[in-house]
Image (cartoon, rainbow, N blue to C red; front, side, top):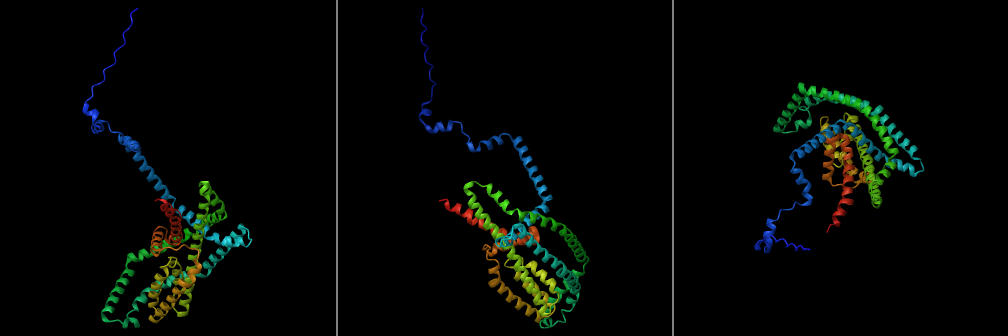
Length: 389
């Protein structure tokens, strides 16, 4: 039986001795490997049609989402306002709870008190303010015409008198122009429409505030449950500090503005200046701007008082300046004792951004939002950065 001879091994492929010996040439001739982390991106770039289609879908989705958010922006404002009101009223409710008042009864007492204040505003404050707005608009032409005969104008030099007369002439032409009258008429109509809409919106905000205030504790617990168990204690502590700061800042801002408006009203009555109710309401709105609101109204109130009498304007300036110092060093530290210290520049930036986005409501919530952001940065972001060495 013939034995099959073993097959000879295949000859090894010839290899250049330079390639086998030189590692640099091996790296050059070897095909480049794609990094794993960029594999998906490079694969997408290899299919430009699919990439363009997906990008177009993303842009269309973003446009649809932006349009939807724009359509419900008013509802979102109601929700945000109601949430801030609930957080702001919660400290008052807790004070009553600590005195052994059940939470539903405490909520009813707090809302009843604010309903009485609102009714008092509608009955005793709003009618004089509306009447004085009409008187103020009607008195503007007579006040401008009477400036050249005033004592303070006669005390100025000739060049300054000419400059003041030129400015007053431009102001008179601007007031008498049809465009200005049309804008004022449209503005009054818009204010009327906004007032009617505000009445209906207030019922929605009140209902949402009652719901948020009654279920605030359960909402917090549901929020804590979303975090890992090891982080819940820290999240609860941070959330309680933020809500306490927000509530204290909101109540403090409204309290300081109310005291400011009362001081302005009393000063106008005692000095004999016109439009006390109107100027008090203007002071309340302007002094909602933290830190700078009182200074802004000092300039506005003195300028308006100057049309009545330089002596009255000087008395108002000095008296209100004394009140600002009293508010800054005595009243504000006691009212805002739970608020977080915020740099003045951030306060001004937050007030401007909030006013541009949401008007007076934005100015009111700007300080609590800035305080919350600073607290999160100090308690969360900075400690994490400190651990990176």
